[in-house]
Image (cartoon, rainbow, N blue to C red):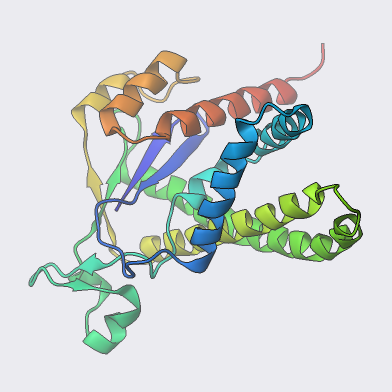
Length: 258
């Protein structure tokens, strides 16, 4: 597992967690992850359906999903603290985070996780600061949003009683409840990693070359494709593109009227 921080503009960055570098604590996915995978499969069937009402439904929901802040998508890539094993530096043994106290292993005994960032655009401390912003804002925001979704969900039950008509608002609020919970878990794990010596800087020359002129006003679409090839992570390009579009919209909305 390693954390990736990439500047999008002079004032905003994106976080992405590459999870496949450490073994998982459990062999089977958690219940909520299995349900989410099942829902994703069902949604894929909706997207490929020729039925007009399903096509309109897919278009509307996808429109709403694209407007979820990219910061939430970023935090959702960070797994919960007890998901992945950690390696002990001296022995190379793998230990589950929840077993650290019982095993007598402290944070300084663990092999640090990589923090990848363009060294030509920011320092290690600046990259850590970006992570801190994600963690602090995420813990507060997503806990509040979970509460809103939990309160609103029962209000959609009358729709579920109507024959034939699917309870789209209910399903959407249920998804948002799960999504905010995943982001909240990611924010808490991120806060934990920042509290002790859990992170070490990692340099990638190819990434440094993209940011050789420092933090950009806005990275370009062509640079997104190159970054995705550098890391070889499926979905990273999609996350970057979504975040860029949202940054552009935010800048447009902040411009004063003439």
